[in-house]
Image 1 (tube, rainbow, N blue to C red):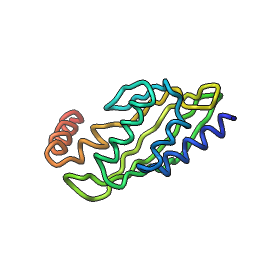
Image 2 (image 1 turned 60 degrees about the vertical axis):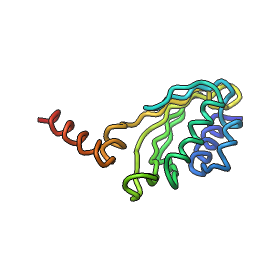
Image 3 (image 1 turned 90 degrees about the vertical axis):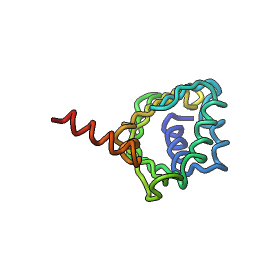
Image 4 (image 1 turned 180 degrees about the vertical axis):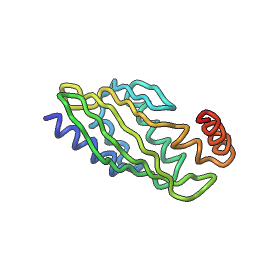
Amino acid sequence: MSYQTSLHNLVQFFEHISPATVSQLTVIYSADASFKDPFNEVRGLPAITRIFEHMFVQVDQPRFKVTSTVLQDNTAFLCWEFYFRMKRFDRAEQCIRGATHVRFNAQGQVEMHRDYWDAAEELYEKLPVLGGLMRLLKKAANQ
């Protein structure tokens, strides 16, 4: 399998993720893959699976749109937009923009996944009480 095919399969997985498709992680990720984002740092397929399953518990209608990809050898970057509705607070659709750095193993499975996005700007500022405090802190830092 080529790394281009692996990247294509990864993009398809994210753009069509649902509670029913989370089980496909066993094909996309290696058994000992590492995963890191602003809230989690785990290793192994069971822990990564729990993160994606938990996403469906925390938010309504989560979906990813991959806006661009770059592939060099066995390493790829994906820019994406993550759309969702909060189960609590504001029910309007929210969007988080971020990027993912992945590395594929020789079998074409993801062995390292690292998400980059600004939790303060993209998430905390949108929460009712915390959002006001975050915007105040941001304003103070910019003066």
